[in-house]
Length: 176
Ligand code: HEC
Image (cartoon, rainbow, N blue to C red; front, side, top):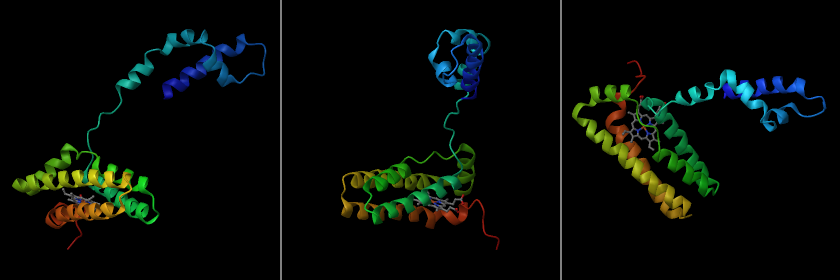
């Protein structure tokens, strides 16, 4: 973005002295007069491409911020239900299903603590994912009874994992 802004400003600077008719919007000139662009490009043409190359790949996130988001998405689902807003329910459920992957570093921490139980942890994560997709579909179809049933199932999945694993995996354990 910054490279593009700089490019446009350069365009304005090069263009300004050539224009004697005043009164025109500088931003309009910068984007409208293509003749100026190659000259401005000469210095900095490689920058936008370099910017794109630096776009971050999805490398996952620590479990705690993922969970905090799931918590507020759950609140949005309840709010959407109470305000008869099916699309809010559907969107929030889709976002739960599509939560970011757990970062490698935190996966290793979890694996170190759970050992063989890691498989069950992953199974519950997948189950919540699948049930959230069904919840979203029910909401999109306006089937409120089915939404309520599915919401119960999703929450059972959340709690199933919490009751088995949360206390052992707390990032910030409460001092005893
Ligand atoms: C596969 C296991 C698993 C599933 C499924 C799961 N959680 Fe969690 N959740 C955890 C663990 C582990 C923690 C503790 C994380 C930590 O402290 O690093 C946690 C913590 C939380 C927290 C507390 C965050 C805080 O600020 O301490 C919330 C809120 C939460 N989860 C919401 C949800 C919701 C909502 C769902 C279901 C849509 C869900 N979780 C499903 C494992 C799970």
